[in-house]
Each structure stands twice: as C-alpha cells, then as structure tokens.
Image (cartoon, rainbow, N blue to C red):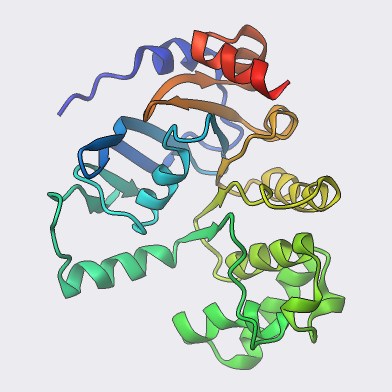
Length: 275
C-alpha cells in the first residue's frame, strides 16, 4: 500500500498547527470507493488530531459526503482502512461483499463513537424533542431514562433549545430541528462529530443559528469533520481545511494557506465560484 503523503498535504504541513494534542484520533489510509465502475474516492489519506476541527471543501461530486459516509460505515469501500484511536475499525472489501453478522455489529459499535449530523434532518416525528435526544442513550447505550433525560437537558441547553423539549419536531423551524439533531448526536458523547452539509437546506438566518452552535463546539475542542460550502465559516472555525476534487485531497492546510494562497488551480476555481 502506498503510504507516501500527498504532495499537497506534505507542502501544507508547515501551514498547520493543531489546536489540541497531536494524537490522531481518526486515521484514513489509501481509501478507494467506486459506484459501479465510477471511481468516487481515489486514495484518500487523512489524519485528524484529537480536538481538531477539520473543514472539507470541494465542488459537488468531489467525494466529500461519500468520505464521511465511509468513515461512519454507512457506505462500504473497496480498498484502504480507517482507524479510530489507533484501532482498525473498517477495511476495504470487494464490490458485492456481503457483511457478516460480526461486521454489522462492528459497524453499529463504531457509530456509537462517531456522531453524524446529516444534510437531511432525521428526527423521529412521533417523539418529542426531549425523547429524540434521549433515544440514543436509552436504546443504544442502555442508560436509565432518568440519566438520559439529564443528558438530553444538558445537550438541549448547549444548543439553546431546552424550552422546546416538550414540542413535536414538526413545530420547529428547520434551523431548530437541525440544532436538535446536533444535540441528539452530542448525547452519545462521541469521539468525533461528522457534519455533512447540515445547513444546505436552510435559509441564511437558520444557517447562522446552526453554524453558531458548531463554532461553539469547535471552541470547546470537539473533534470534528465538517463538510460545507460556507467559506466564511471555514475561515473562522477550521484548524485545518482539506480541499477535495475528483475523489482526491489536492490541498490541505490552514485557512490562510488554503483561502488566501490558493495553492491549486482547482481550488482557485472553486473559491471564485463561491465568491
């Protein structure tokens, strides 16, 4: 397996100083993914340090969301491996591989450590806001309902929505629903938070509400991978920005290096389109 760093990554290393300790909590090695015969991810190598906020930029179809889904084992991949805290948690399998019962159980176990907030808001409509946030601690972690309720209150307070705890999700705005989804992910106390363009369906005001919460989590030292097109958010929040095109990481470094020096032609085109 090729373990040499991508040239852009090696060049950018001098432009990146992690805020937290340098221990890698997520390690992705030579990850390849296809949809049929179409390559989607072409040899992704990425390290995320504990407490680091990494923002992933790139045009639609560059592989950003697929990468998050492979990390979380919502998508299989054909080659490479993912490590969490130094332990291999998934490896590539041939196309058509049917996961065993043990592999499915391992994927469920992995997802307890990776909190994912999706582009589409997946709240349970038949549950109150409080019950939605309690659901993971009770059903997955087996916590007593009283303990789960305390956790849910703390997380709803964190996203500024405790007063909505008795409400049905359908009565909330889109931005409020997405903040509840963040609270639900936080209630599992994950090692890493994955955000997949979670503001793309929101209007500007609701987007600001959600991004304010994510900035707060970054300031607290939460380990995060955030897929977004919001350049201002990336500039203000990211410890490191990763730029993807054609299923590859072609630039990586600090916000200043990526957004001001614009080290690749593809990145320059992308930023021009976003301006």
